[in-house]
Length: 299
Image (cartoon, rainbow, N blue to C red):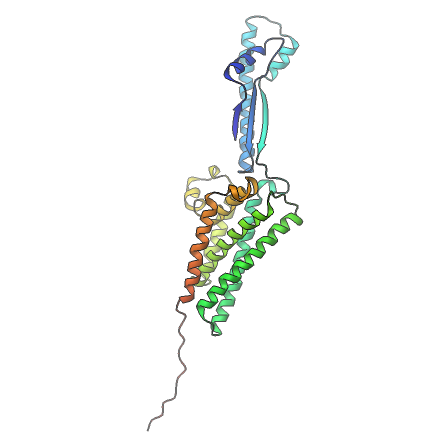
């Protein structure tokens, strides 16, 4: 949000003084709202700025009436009309979300879809890898195939998600291909993180993943300034879902992949780091099973 005074200081003063003359000139003020950053915060700040400008107008009206009252008791109709609205306020919206973008909350919704879809993919491939290892396949080969199949599946799922948003729901996207690429990156980071924990810990990792989703999702569409300091420091600052939602906002509302900043680098770091952990789980020692007893014959 920005409040811009369009007139120069001298023009602003002369404009205010001219309101008491037969040829009034209204000072101009513009309120610029950046809806792409956060539609909820933008709405709150716009309402606040409107109230602030209303209070300023009332103060200016009272001041001008006192000055005019010292000179004359009669005010021309044109001057009285101008005094009722001393400042002309314009509103401008930059980086609008577009139609059918859930009022600017589409990045948070897409992030939730990718997290849940990646989690389902990770669970299915984890169960399949366990069966393959039990059948005698090499563990490191299974881990490599798990990563390859998972990344390919996430890429297809992210493309289908973008197509569904465009075709079924009519979501307006400035660049569908770049949105798909970033969703693929985010989904890959999610899948590798989830699969690494499943491979190393097993199903006890599920409560951790569910709790991470449970505490992160309500924060995705909220402005950081609206959160408590504890929530910002202990959850919002590091959750991977937050970097995905912010990156999607940059891609969808601020110029595509060219506008993506540190959020993409964080997701790349998460993806590479947990890919290494996922492949390293292939060298983890499996459970040893007792050998079947052998018969020993004596003399």
